[in-house]
Image (cartoon, rainbow, N blue to C red; front, side):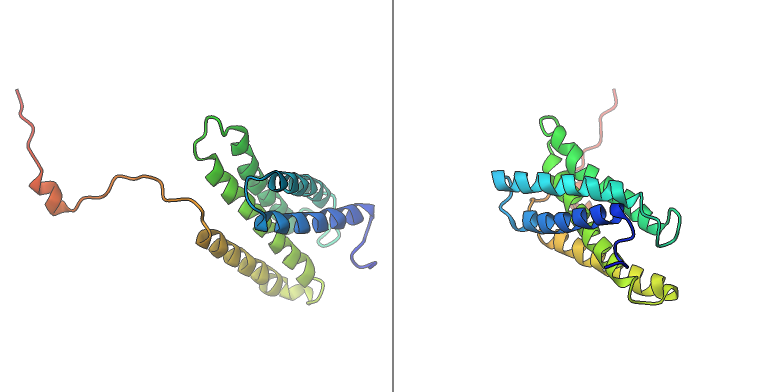
Length: 177
């Protein structure tokens, strides 16, 4: 346990991470739009805020701001993409799509961070880029495929492309005066 808990900040970080993992997984499988979904979603967001704030106080892996901290920056962006459109849902017709993408990316990033945190402890440091980052990228690929395959929205209305032949058959030159 000493290897994981380097400071009181680490303990808070791990507790917030476990809360985010449980609530994030639960919210994925809950019925969307219900009171329960919103409550668990709020727990997820609050635990992610604590998790991200503490992430920027932990430097024992590299001793400085590093790639893992850039992952936390990406997680903040994903969380904002999922949350900000909700505030503008009265004027943003695609708010639910943005919420789905942002929160899906946030949970996927959380799972990837869990893989990073789990793998770098078990392999030599020179393997970090191959094993740890490779496994994290695999999590992102799986997450993207799952989000894409379960995309709940019909495609946006787009004008149907016409073939060149149909265009020319209906073409009428403009009359110049």
